[in-house]
Amino acid sequence: MGIEELAARLRQSRRVTILTGAGVSTASGVPTFRGPGGLWRQCRPEDLATPAAFRRNPHLVWEWYAWRRELIASCRPNPAHDVIARWSHELDDCRVITQNVDDLHVRAGTANLIRVHGSIWAMSCWRACGGSPWRDESVPLLPFPPSCPHCGGLARPAVVWFGESLDQADIDAAIHACSCDVFLLVGTSSVVYPAAGLVHEARRRGAFTAEINVDSTPVSSEVDVAIHAPAEEVLTNIAKRHTP
Ligand code: BV8
Ligand code: ZN
View 1 (tube, protein in one colour):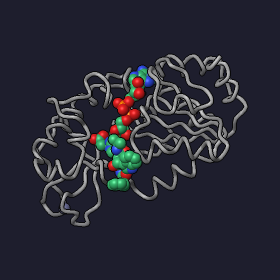
View 2 (cartoon, rainbow, N blue to C red):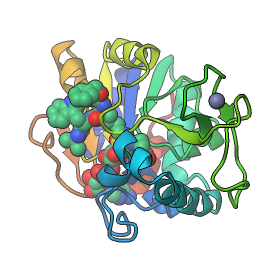
View 3 (cartoon, rainbow, N blue to C red):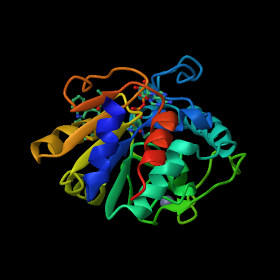
View 4 (tube, rainbow, N blue to C red):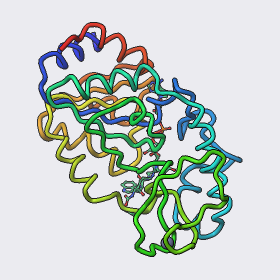
């Protein structure tokens, strides 16, 4: 029932918005935040991905990001990324909002992508010397820890840490994308805000809402359709039926 209805809605829709989380990259081998393998050295991501953790021990936090970069560098986009990338080009108006910093949506060639939490392959200056952020895809990370090319000071990953505000332009674009016919959640536990609030904004704006997740989440009972199965299977299945 769920897949049928979602496929039918997608067929009828002009404006589709997809919000993804770590679960869309599971099939690529990237560990999720809260799932198995999410813990690093027994540290919870929430305890490492904060300005306070970096101020306390920048070396430790950089070791965590170096570990994740090494892992992600060995991963490839999976069929879930590929279907979403295809729809972002083929559908009239398809926007993709991701919480992931792995850039696998970028590597899959996704159009209209809003990366609300930044990229693990971008860096900025910890001292905020005013120099603009830069791309760094070095694996292993050299020099370690990395320094700012503008002032020589310590660099930091250009990601949004807990307690830090998202980029206003990204928030505006994400809220704008809530005006849509279908708002589809893929592989997110829907607990981290403000991203977790977007589905409620989309509902308020009259969107048909759906969730694809192997597990239930705090919003499973609130969306119009909740499909509990792996994203890479469900999206491939719908794509087969859904020729625009
Ligand atoms: C902020 C970048 C202003 C870094 C990340 C309101 C209420 C409560 C708390 C708050 C609130 N407003 C603000 C907060 C505080 C906080 C927050 O939300 N805390 C949570 C923990 C309660 N939010 C913030 O701090 C945000 N900033 O609000 O600024 C402000 C400031 C101070 C105080 C007030 C306001 C910044 C949040 C961004 C943090 N940065 N990442 C990095 O990556 O290193 S968040 C990070 O965690 C990810 O980006 C992602 O967003 C989140 C993890 O969630 P998911 O991606 O969903 O992953 P998860 O592992 O949880 O779940 C995976 C799911 O996939 C599971 O459900 C699983 O079942 C499913 N799955 C697995 N395999 C598959 C699958 N599904 C389908 N197919 C599969 N194969
Ligand atoms: Zn600097």
